[in-house]
Length: 359
Image (tube, rainbow, N blue to C red; front, top):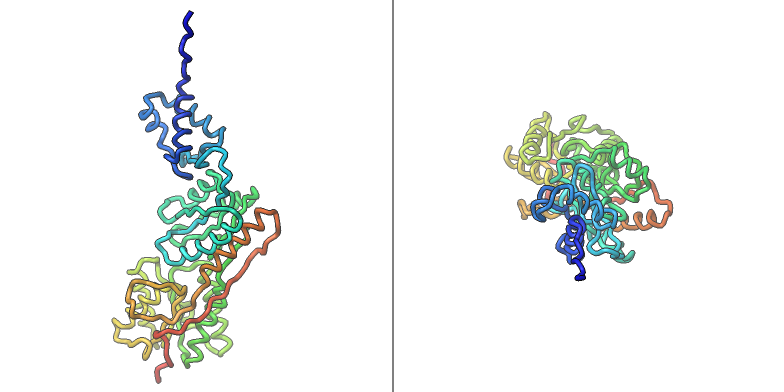
């Protein structure tokens, strides 16, 4: 009697095809699979069959299901031993973050790991980017909070309580207990202010994008340094933009320059804000730095007004990535790490600060 051909179970056939695609690299690490409906249409099977196949793939470690987000590829190849760390940043379009990624990668290479980068500013629920990274098997994370789409404390705190190793970088998330490596913005606000005091300025303003923990720390350094010189902030509470949009920053800059008597200098918390403040000063007929001095913050190169060589406080971006990497190594080994590590910036004198104008 002839042997009957073996009947292939539908969901196994679907599982085998998707697994083969993952093995071959058709689906990249961290990539979201098509929806159940799309897969059902592609394979010509029911959604129930697709669910059975995906459940099997999840049990085998090929994929990870994230509630409310979808199903994501967990490994490029089954059995792969490649270690993966993650760097979560607002966006790589910002010049701050590529050097930071480079510093983290240096440490990761030594530890035998590669670094994947996740962006949060394009995600309406930015914490989902972090949970997806955890779901696909990233073993540790360095997380940079965004000012555009702030991170929610609750899921991060739950992650911390679970023992998952992550470090907050260049910013804090109130309500989250996790190691953090920050720029010493209190110190940086102080050295920017002291530079202007040394030039003879006495009405020194604080100009910033919307308040954030590092902004508050920088304002404290500014205020304390003025107090040591027997002076007060001018105006008393500083001037803050309503948002990160250039139009709002420019509007706030014009408000600052309308203060009477007008300040003769300002420190800023954002290089873009410094450029916009210089433009606003020029628009009201003030010469920079002869009549108005400006100090930037960050030490990043911008395309706008390349001839404008800012005096600025340069922050150690690559060093921050390296320090975050060293913390992750210790956390993965079960060692204790400092709750907070502060990295001071350095003053770089350019052409936007000069002696205080005569009264």
